[in-house]
Image (cartoon, rainbow, N blue to C red; front, side, top):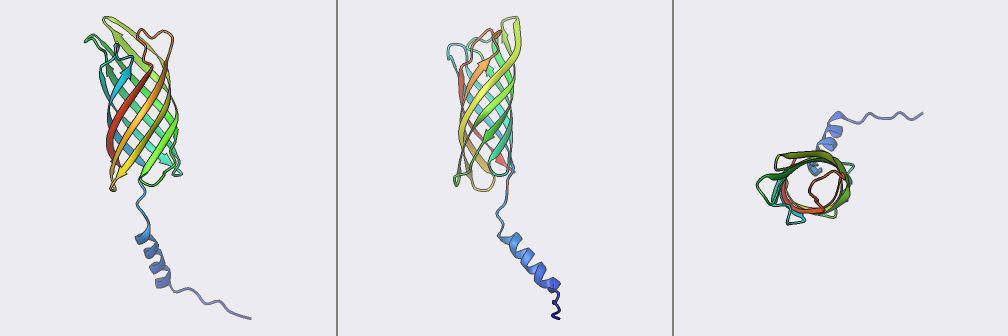
Length: 164
């Protein structure tokens, strides 16, 4: 009968430390800030907002966004909150992504306000710079609830942020 010899603890520890030393850092979350232009341009000025996203299994991203789109006139604005599910397969440093989002908005037009729901088609790409920095360009096609006083058809945005 052959007896197996135990593997020395120091050998197991060295292999484990070697694997840790060669592993790439994994950043599963990002925070970005963006500037945006919406259409129709006669209704909207330059907007801004922020996103928090998390990536699962290196392909699926879940994102929460808050956006503020001032109107063309001072008494008009729209604030929106959107949650999106995105496919984001990495292609080196460039990561194209696309998916669907749903959320709520509040429009103010003079003294009148309207709160409703929105749906969004999201398409974009992001580039990782170094270990922590991210640049994004994005297109969103919107479908606002029928009660919206002002139409918003789509929005393009440019963002910068950090990955952690």
